Length: 86
Image (spheres, rainbow, N blue to C red):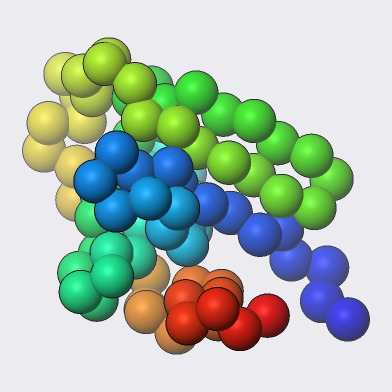
């Protein structure tokens, strides 16, 4: 068993997307394979011991994040629950 926390972004267009957080950046894997990039100040965060859910809000990213240079994670670092699997 893995001790990793499952993370998800609740996206208004795409629904629940697998997510990965690096520092203040939250990356989500869209259904078309594109990696979406958000920042924590744009979201409400609900977390438990095993899961973290990010909900997009109306807050824009902070000015210091306008030129964010964080490199997105590899696609294979996202949870494998994309096709209804566990």
